[in-house]
Length: 196
Image (cartoon, rainbow, N blue to C red; front, top):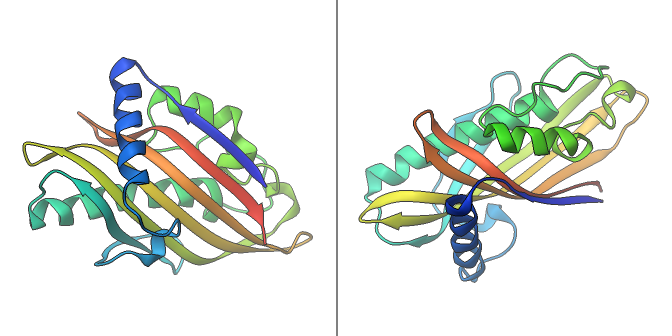
């Protein structure tokens, strides 16, 4: 099992990360993001798995249409990452340099340093394919004056590999997101990856 925690950014991002971590801990729910309520879809591009997006703890007030928009936008950020890092591309391969779309520049650098965790670089040259089974995201949201200002996305991804190395892999943990002019971006993470 591989685990890394990376929080990237300035004082505002660090404060936001602490606030979201506290929010996530106060939710009282299961660690598995698949246990939460209503869903919103975010379709993966090349594989027959749909990311199920639910809501956990919301601190502040969000209108239903804002929730729907967040589910779609953050679901797409997570789906683009999991597709680029784990599910997509031709295998076998060794190049995972473009595996972190939707991450800030600082978070991309950190993820590149953790690429055995944050992508399939550790196994990419020993497999010839990936079969996705489950992709679930639960959102804890911090809202100020009815506007979301920070999100912790609890991520669970399960997939199998084919080829010389056949195993079931689980990627699980948290992505910390902040709003930017270019949409929601991942500025930090706390993830695990391992075989089951």
